[in-house]
Amino acid sequence: MEVVNSYEQGTKAYKHCVGAMRKLARITKLAPIVDALSDLNVKQTEFRQDLQTVDIDEFLAIRDQVLGISQELHPNGDAPTSIASNML
Image (cartoon, rainbow, N blue to C red; front, side, top):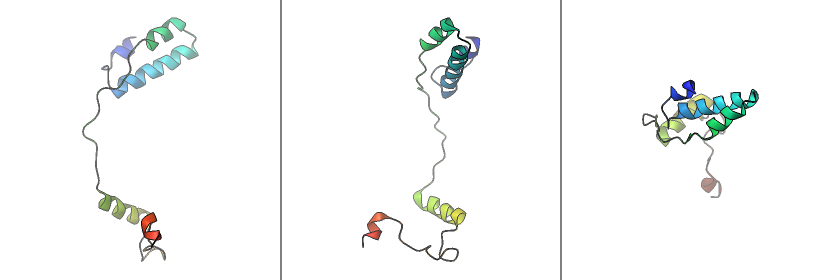
């Protein structure tokens, strides 16, 4: 249990650690440890706030660059891609 207690409860790392220890205990057939780990609350309550974001225009520009979906690189590069524009 020392490994589990080395992580802060409520974090994703804690949840993954308990899951790994549970699996190890099941594989080695250590029922008392499986029971003890099953009693732990592994619900993630802390989430990262520093995630990256990108707006749709930037995403489409990067996607076009990577996939080569442009008029110069692909003959159907300017074809409509949305369902609504295909219905016109």
